[in-house]
Image (cartoon, rainbow, N blue to C red; front, side):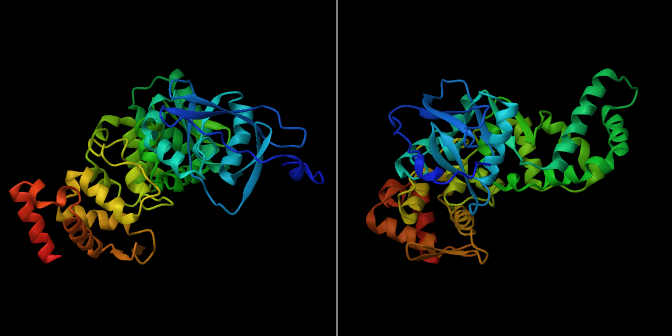
Length: 382
């Protein structure tokens, strides 16, 4: 907590990001200093670097935007949300002077051009990181569960038994059930597992750990397998992402269509991030450019042009569902068009518009005969 010094915020200038070189795989890297400033602020340095540098990536949820906390970046004021603020306080003690890449700080969120550049190389950023830390917040219940798990791992190394490891863990866990049942349930149903971007972040990680408060664990897949049977149900997305962490090859290189089927309802601030967050994993989609400044209609046309799997009736319906479920009623407005989960009127409009404007693969002279017939039939029936 910063000290209540009169006029302190007027005397310290606001931090502004210096532009990155968008022709290179450039990034910014931050370091959290172990000591607070004389005024009581968390202190960080931010420098330009590249994916060739050695750094750790943070995977987390941004959280509620209503609360903003000031920190110092290069001796200038910068505001962050509560969840990241809590993490930086942990970093001061647990990872002093370690280099981090954290999107909310390392990307100039006010610049569309920079967001386009950084999001386009997000897969490379996480692939190059030496470690990815999943931050789950300052939860005392999860921290106690993690401590119990780490105790078990240390005990197991010194303990031999004729029983299967799972049975031994079960006996140990039952003896400490009350101590960490709430922690397990909080972990397995945490809002983190609903976030769109985590799929890419987990799949590209070289080394992965979970962090709650000051306690860290590394055996992700075993903790999932060993606890569900006796402490309650887990969100299916928790299991999906633990499986991805354990078997990355099962998701890397899948088609965008398949990825959207597997993960259609992940949460994000912008509907198109459900697509952008998967581009670094998809086998196709190189022609799909990250462009937050484009219209929604242009974005959808680009998807059809860049992903052949989506260029069918079922693909159109899937895309309508993926992009149209941000609001509770399943409807949103896109450039005057209506996008609905259950129907595809915008797809109808897109196809007609594309045909009239000779855009992309919807030109009949650029389509194989069978596809041209299929799309014509779809236009008649849409």
